[in-house]
Amino acid sequence: MKSCETAALSTTTTTDFLASLLQSSKTKSETCDSQEFSHHLLMDFVTWEFNAFLWVSLIAVTALLLRKVVKVFRAWAQARKIPGPPCPSFYGHSKLISRENLTEVLSVLHKKYGSIVKLWLGPTQLLVSMNDPELIKEMLLKAEDKLPLTGRAFRLAFGPSSLFVSSFEKVQRRRESLATELNGRLIERAPVIPTKVVDCIMERVNKFMAEGNFDCKMVSQHMAFTLLGSTLFGDTFLVWSKATAYEELLMMIAKDACFWASYSVTPYWKQGFWRYQHLCTKLKFLTQDIVQQCRKNYKFFLHKDENLHNENVNMGMESASGAPSCSGVEMPDNLFSRELNGHLSAREEPCGNIMGVMFHGCLTTTGLIDNLLVRLVTHPKLQDKIYAEIIMTRNGSMKQDQQCVDKMHLLLATVYESARLLPSGPLLQRCSLKHDISLKTGVTIPAGAVMVVPVQLVQMDDSSWGQDASEFNPYRFLSKAENRSDLVLDTSCRGNAEKCVRPGDSSFFLNDPNNNVAFLPFGSGTRACVGQKFVIQGVATLFASLLEQYEIRLESGSKGESEPTMNDTIFQLLPSPDIVFVRRNS
Image (cartoon, rainbow, N blue to C red; front, side, top):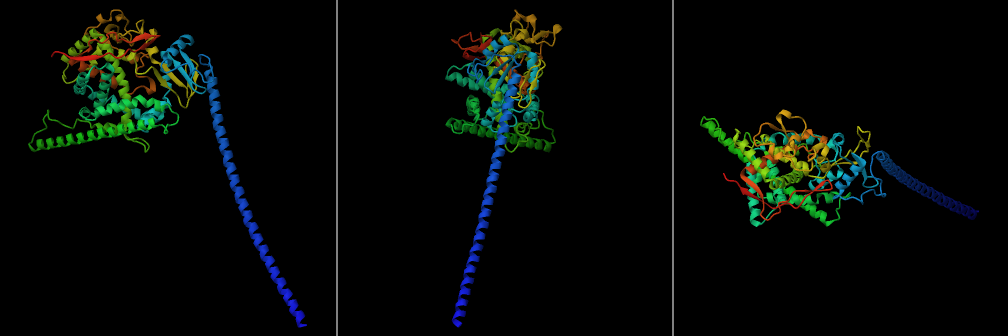
C-alpha cells in the first residue's frame, strides 16, 4: 500500500515538474514571439518611413524638373515672337558664333531682322540683342540684374561681397553709398591729387624707358592703377613699397578671372585653380597691408596736429593758416569701413569690396586711358590745342594748385569721344532673374534671358551720331552758345572740325553726352556705372596735369598709322604704338 502511494506521489511530482517545464517553455516562447513581433513592427515602420522619404523626394524632384520644363517651354513660346534666325540644331547657335565674332554676327542679324534679335546659345539659354536707343533705354531701366557669371567671377577672386552680385536688390544700398562717396568727397580731392600722381607715373615711365621701349597699353595700365589707388588710399599709396607687386597681381588675376568663373561647378580638382586662389590670397594680404598703412599714417598726422595745436594754445596763438592740419583730412580707411565694408554680413570678405573696386576700376579706366593716349599721339594738332586750353585755363584760375577741368571743354570732349569709339567692352549685358521684361513694342523677354547691347554698333550708328559716326571727332560734343540744345551732336562742325573751336572760345559749350541715349560706354539705367563722373573727372584731371608738363609723341620708328580700323562696322585695334614723353620747356 505504501509502495503504491509512493509511486503515485512520484508520478504526481513528475507530472507537475513536466507541467512546470511546459509552462516555462510556453512563457519563454510567448516572450520570444513578443520580441520578434516588436522587431518586425520596428522594421516595418523604418521601411515605411524610408519609402515615404523616397516618395517625397521623388515628388519634389519631379516637381522641380516639371517646373524647369514648363519654364523652358514657356521661354520657347515667348521667344517665338522675337525675330531671329532659326536654330540649326538642338544646341542653338553656340557652335556658329564665338566671343570674337559675336559683334559682327549681331551686326548682320540686326540688318536682316530689325532692332531686336534673338539667338539661342543652347536649349535653355536665350540671348536677345537690341540696337535701337529707345528700346535700349527702356530695357536698361527695367532689367536690374547682371549675369550670374559676373558675380561668380568676383566671388571666386575676392570672396563673398555685397557690392558685386547679380541681384540688384542685394546690391542697391551699397551702390548708392558708393556713388555718394565717389561723386562727392573723392571728386573734391581729385583735382589736387594728379600733380603727385604724374610725378609717380613719370618715375615709373622713366624706369621703363631706361629698360627699353614700352607701348600705350603698358603706360595706360600703370596710369589707371596709380590714379585709382592714390584717390582711394591717398598719398600713402604713392610711397607704398608694394604697389608694383599689387599691380602685377591684380593684372594676373584679371587675366584668368572669367575663365575660372565659367565653370558651373567650382573646379577644386584642378591645380591651376589653386594657383589662382593663391594669387587671390596674396592680393588680399597686400590689400590689408595698404589699409593698415593708411591707418598708421592717419594716426601719425592726427598726433602731429594735436601737438601743434597744443603748442599754439600754450603760446596764446591760433593755428597758422599754413600749418599742417589733420582736421580737413579724411582718413582713407573711413571710406572702406563705412561705405565699402560697412555693415558686412558674417559671410562677406572684409577686403572683398576694396579689391573689387580696384579690380573693376583699373580694367575699365585702363581701356579709356589707352584709347586717349592713342588719339593724342595720332592727332598732334589736337594735342596742341588741348595744351593751349590747359594753359589758358590755368592762367585764369584762382587756384594754381588745382586743375579746373570743368572749363577745359575740348579736353573733356576728347575723353568722351575716346570712350564712345572704343568702349571698355563690346557688349553691355543685363538680365532679369525673377521677372519677365515687357517692352513697349509688345515684345516680352522671359526671365533669365541674357539681354545684350552691341555697344560699338550703337555708338557708331549714323542715325544717332551723324554721317561721320565712325570717325574720331571730339567736336561733336561741343555746340555754339546761340544754338545750344540738348542734342549732343553738333553738325555745324562737321567737315572742318579743327577750325570750329579755338582754345578759350567762350562761344562754345560742352554738351552732356548722357543726353544722347546712344552714349553707353558707362552703361545706363539702374545698373549704370556709379563711377562714371569720378572716372571722367579723374582721367581728365590726370591728363591736364600730364599734358601741362609733357608732350606725348610716337617713338621714332614706330608706325604712325596706329588708328583703329573699321572691319564690318566694328573697330579692330592695331598693336599699341610705342610712345615717349617729352618734357615741355618751362
